[in-house]
Length: 230
Image (cartoon, rainbow, N blue to C red; front, side, top):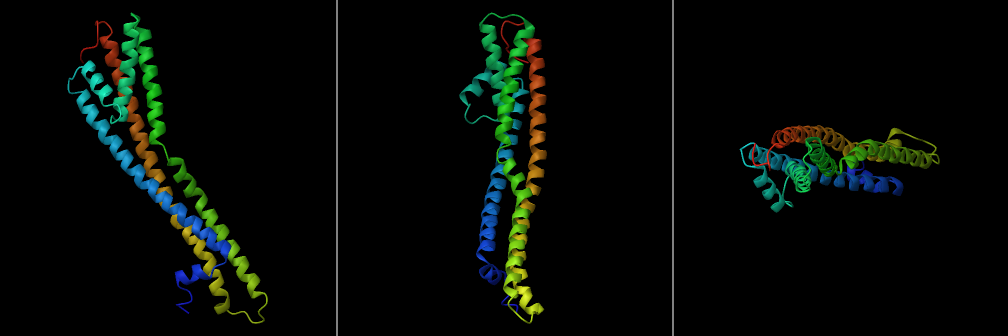
């Protein structure tokens, strides 16, 4: 009896529809774990690069030197450094056009930084919707496999004159494996989604705070011929 009801035996004895559901859920679970690890490393990298740039930014290095370093290191730069570079680029272009109005200069730099911020946020949120979909849909896919398996099992029992627990249990157990696999795929996805959503909110708040702080620095430097330090 124990051998007949082993997990492997239940999967092999299930109907082809239930097996297809199980295979789909296993593939989704593997893709979900791949997305989780990819996102985990990506957020750690973003936080590390942002912290490094923030330390450099507040160390007293001139804005021009920071902008030159950001331009040279554009591909390997962090989110905050790219936002800074966007603001400085727009600020410098407006100054080159001999625009002296403080409001125009500041608004232009701020708009450029906000656009860059949105692009960076879109990149950080990549695959987050996939995890949300896995967490919400997988249990229902598993439930569909379970319902189909139980229906298939009872149809098979209809031809039997004597039905005992021993004859009913294998078919129901086969069907319930689909629900178990669905939950196995959904639970890590939901936990990871909530964790990453919280981490991304922190990253977004940190970048928005930097935009405001950098805008204040530009506002203080508007009277100078060129932004040389802070």
